[in-house]
Length: 173
Ligand code: K2U
Ligand code: ZN
Image (cartoon, rainbow, N blue to C red; front, side, top):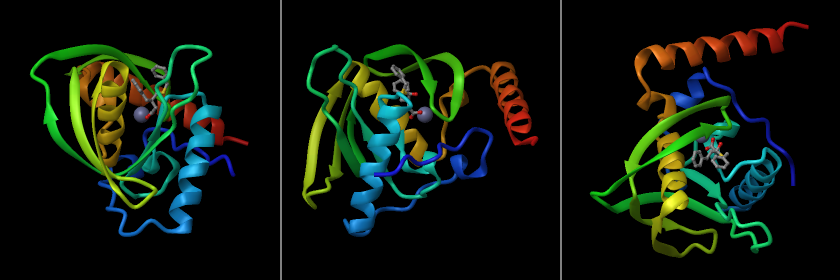
């Protein structure tokens, strides 16, 4: 397994629409492994392939928050939303591609989704709570959308300027 570098906003690859996974190959399985390791290392509870520069419709997540509970890693490919609840919930979101920045995002509280698993089978499940928030946050990454796109323009610009400055400073030898 290899830790993959996580792209930092602003980066054009984070704004692109990712392409469907056509078949579950060894490369895809290795990528899933690397993404899970990268996510746990960050640490994070979700990570989408575009965040490590791979423009494929795949994300990993493990929103188990209770200490001591067994981890529940999930690998989701080609997700399709089947249903969204009318009820909304607001969560202070962050993003591994926008470090140290947080903002309140309102999303449907529950989501029913279908996807292709590493086993090549189609899976279907309803997500609630933090899992629902995380699924929608990762789905957005596959469609080139970031949580800051839901914030007020001034706040979004301030965060983008801060990240661009951070990247300039990191780039300078
Ligand atoms: O996709 C990502 O950048 C990982 C996100 C996933 C996420 C964001 C907001 C709300 C839920 C999931 C996070 O950076 S993972 C870090 C984290 C950890 C605990 C709770 C919220 C976010
Ligand atoms: Zn994110």
